Length: 277
Image (cartoon, rainbow, N blue to C red; front, side, top):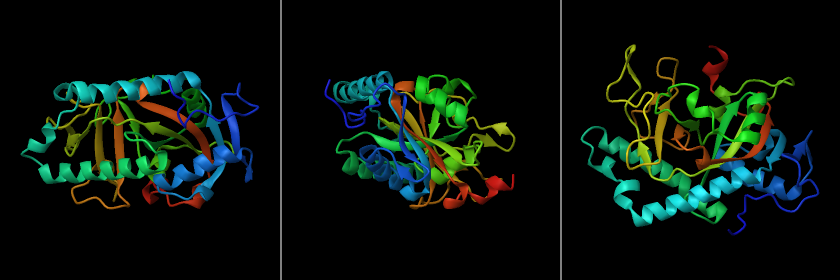
């Protein structure tokens, strides 16, 4: 298997799980910092928001990710009816909105492919607790799908916006917010426009706690965060560059954690209602 760019470069700290990249504003590893600095803008922020950063050096997880990427590429080519369904295009409900969602994800994929020099992979981020971030660095995302039913499917949730991920982060001892930046393979993503609930009841047209839609490898939605009532429900208007999204994958190997970072909450625009809830 060819060496992919996300494998950590030669460094004296090859045996470390977490390789220091940035600490107290000082760059500890310039090559890895350049990788981080190139990814953060795709997550809607500037590299300067990062206070501390560590490269996650986990060859086992990297190999699993590479195998998944190779396999899904082959499946799309060899058996498109089973693994690359385009059935959403024939939906009678929210067809235009589903098309907008899909176009938004394709924009992310195009930007990422230009940066990564490969297709089918996008940078994504999760906000979390510091101890949970360390577990992810060591073991990957294998246990996350079982934590709760999930509004858009019982899978592993990511976003392409660091500000939105910040609403799920919890301050570490020094007050910084903790994030895990990963690479993800959406594969064939099913656009979800149905809210998980109608009033207080589960929406029969929704995907609350559901497995991945047949013929797809992930679910994708763009969420409305304009207030507490609509927080997290699908956006009903055309998404913009500032819209927040959620990507749900269903296989742990679909996502590779590559950076554990700390950011100061005051350095970028988190969603205001998070601090008033």
